[in-house]
Amino acid sequence: MTNITPFTTRKPRIGILGTGSMALALGKSFLAAGHFVAFGSRRPETKKEFHEIVGEESRIYGYQAAIDAGEIVIITLPYKEVAATARKFADSLRNKIVIDITNPFAAQPNNGDSGAQVTASIIGEGARVVAAFKTNFAATFENPVDSTGEPREVHYAGDDEEAMEAVEELIKGIGFKPVECGTLAQSVALDHMVPLMIRLDATELDAQHLSSFRLTPG
Image (tube, rainbow, N blue to C red; front, top):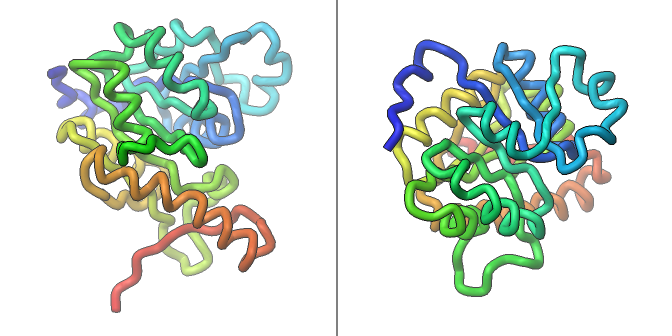
């Protein structure tokens, strides 16, 4: 197991696989918090407006270079692409902290496993996968404080204690409240929360995508 103690005294470098709305929202937040962020794209040469959107300090590479550049790697790809990507880059992802934010939706494994469990099993022995940022809309990263005046929650789950601690600090570092939700197996609950979140946001809040889950005391 890789010791992540140095992360307590410095900001870890982050690699983000993908350039969709969640990738850009997370990347902007981590850049603003002082992290080095490397975005990974299958075709980085086509992202002509990327720096205008994210900022001149942003860096965009191919997948392999983004993985190599990051001590923590965040997978933000469409779920249908995750298995093949994790398999192709398994050797590079192994022993790194990997945050899987992807949501299976209709492709939820029928054996009861969570999407993040599948990612970890593909990476294989040494995988340090944490499920996180699944239950957050991209637009909310522009304002981590909600209408109550309190930080929004980020639910996260995993099996590696040190990786969980590192992700907890990442969440706090961009102004959100980390809520620990158990093991990777238990993160299947997060997979199921996402369709509900989208449905409620549409039916109750006109699909503004500015809402968040919150655990409140009785």
